[in-house]
Amino acid sequence: MAFSRGRIPGHTISVMERWDAIVVGAGPAGCAAACDLASAGRAVLLLDRAEFPRHKACAGGLTRKSLRALRYSVASVTRETISAIVVEKRRGEAATLASRTPVCALTVREELDDFCLRRTIEAGAQFARIGPIVAIDASGDGVAIETPERRHHARFLVGADGVHSRVRQLVHGDCPLWLRRGFALEAEVRTGDDGDGDLVFDLAGARQGYGWIFPKRDHVNVGLYTESAEERLDRPRLLAYIRQRFGDARVGRITGQFLGFGAENAPAAEGRTFLVGDAGGFADPLTGEGIYGAIASGQAAAAAIDGELCGSVAAHRTFARRTAQLRKDLLLSASGARWFYGNLDLGYRALTAPVFRGAVINAYANGTKIAGLANAIRRFARAFAASA
Image 1 (tube, rainbow, N blue to C red):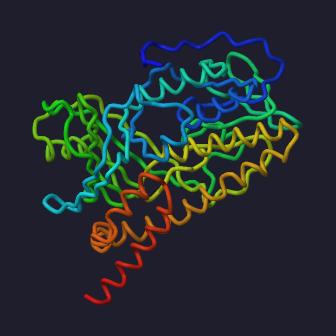
Image 2 (image 1 turned 60 degrees about the vertical axis):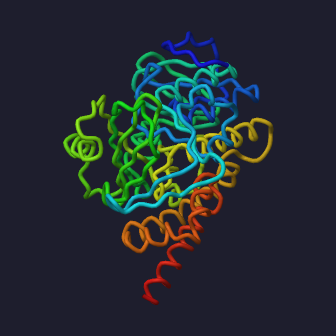
Image 3 (image 1 turned 180 degrees about the vertical axis):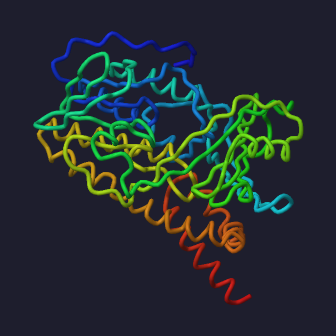
């Protein structure tokens, strides 16, 4: 299907006593859940406050693992395909991690999210724009959510509405102890060379984080990311970083976005409400990547809901089982991130050592044992420091 832009209006909602599932949030996590449920023949209502296409701050990189997890090709909204990553510790000190095959497809999130929403609607999900959710009643054998427009009833509810999730606030409280927030600020930059260039992670860009440069054909995305609450990222800081890298290049819109971490410490799922993506803290603290965790957790919620509707195991048990490995990986990633960003010189030296370069880029792309690899790098760096 060729990608074509155009506003997606709120659809007229079918008359439905009770939906099999309501999904709040139409980003990657929400669309992953709604698409799988609709494809399984379930009655799904997908809700979002935004009008699509809508802008969102995100580097827009889809690694091999994300591309494999998606149920459809996103080739029509892929701007560039990357087979190498440049990792910088400071200007003039950099290493290239290269692969024989592409490791990342670069998209513009505005286009990607719009495309995924269209595919989800094609699968059979109904989409509607809503005002703010004012109440959620999760008692009994179903869930009801109330908006200024109407009250919706479903067997299950999926909260895919971002790090400031209204679903999570109303069901679990405003900010549970397990939730951690990161922050990213990005801009579209026109450099005059049609967005060509390397994909760069600049470890000197921000404490407990990095700067990034992602080529997007007609522009580059330039951003700063941190997990540290003490690191201040604002518009002047980003503009100074862009001037340092690109001089007087033309800077487009600047947008900020929070990321949600902490799924590894979240309590086991219970009841009929599931938190996925940033709402459930499924972003990776080591890499800052959120799209894969969004897709994987959204699909896990869909499988859990469909299983119970088929008369199988209770959905909350299936969701806990299907996300168990992802949570273990995130636990190791959190540990690796604390060490790596706290020991950047050693971490960079180990990360870019010839013995690890191929393994690092392929683990990043494939999602296979990246957390374990991070801890192997930590052990290597400690041994290197002891022998130096």
